[in-house]
Amino acid sequence: MNNFEFRNPTKIIFGKGSIEKLKNEIPQDAKVLLLYGGGSIKKNGIYEQVTSALADVDMIEFGGIPANPEYAVLLKALKVIKEEEITYLLAVGGGSVIDGTKFLSAAALYEGDTPWDILAKSIRTEKGMPFGTVLTLPATGSEMNSGSVITRSETKEKLAMGGPGLFPIFSILDPQVIASVPTRQLANGLADSFTHVLEQYLTYSVGALLQDRFAESILQTIVEVAPKVLKDPSDYDAASNFMWSCTMALNGLIQQGVPSDWAVHAMGHELTALFGIDHARTLAVIAPSHYKYNFEAKKEKLAQYGERVWNITDGSIDDKAYAAIEKTVDFFHQLGIDTKLSDYTKDFEGTAEKIAQRFTDRGWLGLGEYKTLSPDKVEKIVKMAY
Ligand code: NZQ
Ligand code: ZN
Image (tube, rainbow, N blue to C red; front, side, top):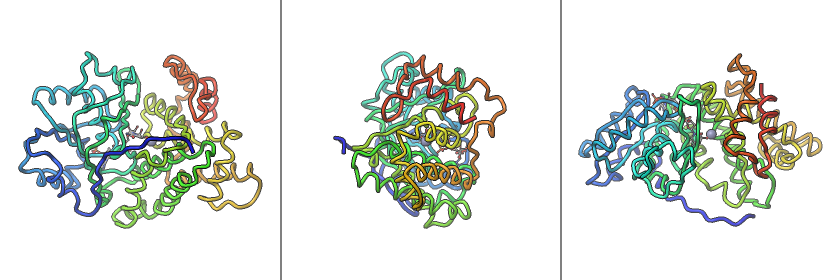
């Protein structure tokens, strides 16, 4: 096992009716900006629950943060934060609203002239404006991690940022919110969280037995609850297991002491930036090709995943590893998610070259657990995904 240091300061408040507990978490003297997305919270009762819990708090609101949080919109929210002398942010939404809030947390205290530099120059945020979250869509794990991904449509870019100052102070997870989530977004959440685990697990063994079993247990739980969640999102048992699995998939725990990959996400973000494809679906497009292309380096772990998660017992390491990739593709299909770029756009020619060029320009010359996945390899993987 590799050395590690681990600290996750986010307080989780989980369970039925927990949105009411908001009032215990926001400091009395705070001036709060409530941030939300396109308006789903106004239709499903979450907005009511939040505003009645915070009736006594000095709070204004900013709505309209789109899926794949857009830089230009966030700059408008930043103006409100400065003009209204906001001291505390409250994100009520899915990964997009929470990530947008993290950007604002960083940008509000940033001393440079151009907030985009936080993303373009990978400036780590040591201290941000404090914020809490009410999660409305399980998927990204953003509610308990310090990462964020921001889109700039003007330049068709989607870049990540983060730092120890960007953990939410608290996150409220009431699984009942899932009841109103559309099937497409439920499927996205299942596929995204599943792939988060794969990114931290399908690498090479360092003898970290517990981390492997943490990862496998999250994968098994997602596979078990997926049909139940899709059939009836108001099934509380399924919803609560789904929600906690998504959080555990990317709150840092399973990544400690083990190598991680994250190349699927790096390539996937480009497909969202170029074509607007939902984040989770870009992962389902890239992952199968990535695992096939890197088969030799990953096959031991792929075979272990096949045995322990998919009960594949027959054949050699190679047979099991290959069957595990096939099972993963089947799982995405069962969620109703297509796994080829051509399923999403007919305009895909040249995409692989463009992504490879972008990675070269950014100096991303070696991705993956071995830091050897060069832009020419990225180009081949993306082409395999057409
Ligand atoms: O905007 P509203 O109207 O609220 O509707 C949203 C949105 O259209 C809707 N929704 C959310 N909760 C709902 C609901 N509809 C009905 N009932 C509810 N309870 O769902 C739609 C999608 O929301 P979004 O927040 O975009 O989805 P998700 O949580 O999948 O977030 C995706 C974003 O997170 C980033 C992705 O790149 C993408 O930009 N990620 C963030 C990560 C992180 N911070 O750690 C890691 C991930 O790998 C990912 O990159
Ligand atoms: Zn993801």
